[in-house]
Length: 204
Image (tube, one colour):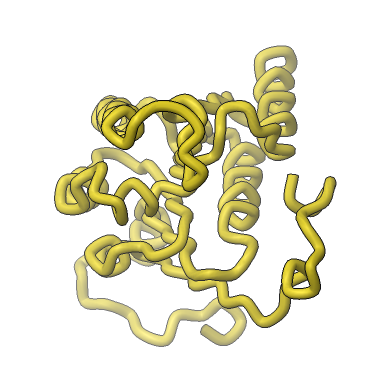
């Protein structure tokens, strides 16, 4: 894609403008750092274009303080007060469930994840948001808590012009096949390799 130029023009009957405005399904996966960070960067661009942004955060504990959350809530308030940018909603799906399994049984966590997905599916059908971040959503798919086929079917046939970006390791192949944009983050080097834990301003 030299200088942003496409290498192939498909014979799909669409004009360049129509093709350019098709909704995007993006997946950020892989073992490297930066999957969610990149998704929130896309959400920031969407907000600047006046898109309604909905963030749905799976896996991370409801108690964890995420820097992007504070920033986007502030941007949402700015929109309400001045009309700048777009509206913002931020939701944490479930109560503190993660790979650390702090509270509740596996069945409780699975039910919370499924409830979260069903709410997203309802919003997609009603075109509630223009831009969705499903953060760490690959994990409930990997664990079998949410049916991959159902998710792919819903995303592929979502109405209107709704962009969706999904983050997390081990994205299922069916999701990758359905996506328009797939980025795999690979780890070359990380401070944790040298025994350094996460720090303010970098991890949160």
